[in-house]
Amino acid sequence: MHFLNKLIVTPNLDDPAKKHMHIHRHFYRYSKGDFIGPALKISKTKGKITLKGAHEYEDLILELVVRSLSNSQPDFEIKGKLITGSDLQDTISNLGLNWALKKSTGKTKNYKADIIDQINKNLLLQALEIFRENSYLLLSFVINPTCKVTTKKKIPQPSKKKAEDDDVNKRIQFCTGILSNTDANLKMVLDLAVPDFISDIPKNWKSIIILNNYEINEIEIPTNIKDTRLLRIMAIRKGKMFRSLNIDGELIEKQYSILV
Image 1: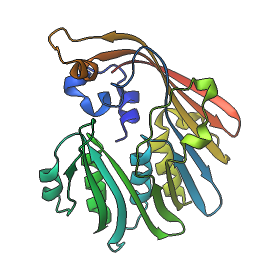
Image 2 (image 1 turned 135 degrees about the vertical axis):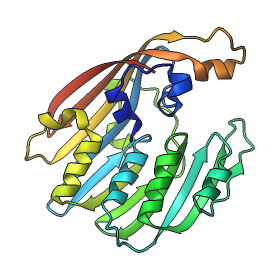
Image 3 (image 1 turned 120 degrees about the horizontal axis):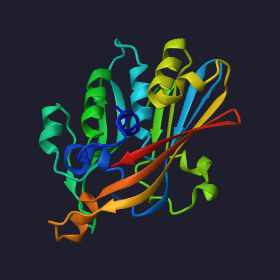
């Protein structure tokens, strides 16, 4: 499940840095103030649904397109990169994947694997669910013109712009997914992308833009940690999440008080 969907269900996490790091990790770069979060655009024509997302929506786009595949789909080629903060080579091997993880040599300590592989639907969904908890899986593949994903291989720097200055169209070029426009696929996309807005969406729409912005009002600093980097990671953020939908020009917004 995408981290924002989990946060919608439980916006006030119990001990997020220890019990919910899979969600908390998306917030520990934030200090106090207003911040632009991930954005997603869903558009549809008669034949296809197009998903365009900013960083932190690439896992949902990948999930939606892969789920749309037939269970009888033969193995297909994927290309891309796995980026993680931990040595997950054993996890990779236990999944039966031949991805060689290499430790970075720069200031930011992480591990990366360049991926060119043949994989099936179920294994890719299994790997996605495991790696989205603590990593970024940046994959691309093409099955046919109405079933493909394209993701950039380099994670962008967090935006320093204010919400009113945000260039959404530029940010959502990070990942693109295309799947066939069927009733089942359309329901799946809306259920997984905007579960809290389902009743607000009219039947006849062409384009939906989803924005997620944050207002951090308070930061709880652990008292038993001296390492400054670890302090930032383990600190708890309190504030609000603003989720807005632009449906063919009509704006709908929901607010959540969050503890992350």
